[in-house]
Image (cartoon, rainbow, N blue to C red):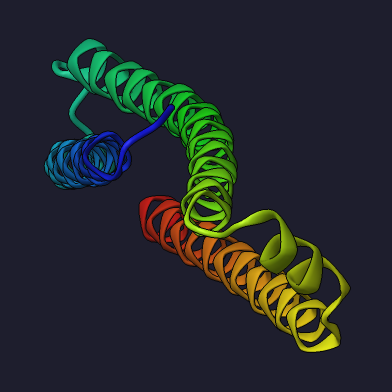
Length: 175
């Protein structure tokens, strides 16, 4: 038998889990920003040395080559990091959906047990045969599917925005 306290604790745990994942995502964004700053700094340094090279100096040619390699390594690392975080985001979404589904199932079962537990046999039979209850179930299912669709749309929009941001940053790096 699942009590209301159990359900509330489960809800708190789920919400804390989501909050922790959001904090992780923010931390990842800050790491990406730091990496982008490093890339910008390396790019400025590379531009300086390329100008110096074009003037005719061959003394620092090896240094310029080394800096170009560093920039390429940072770009590769950024791409690997981006792919890793995409996969991590996908896993977190799947876990969240599983937790949400499990929680909704527990809430439904708990509500049904509570409602049926207080009624006698005659009332239970009336409820099962009552048409308005069936309509309420239909409304609940529709609301549930609407919420799931809304969550899916928000997740897709967030993914799209993150992809656009990364693509824009890569464009700036190429420039």
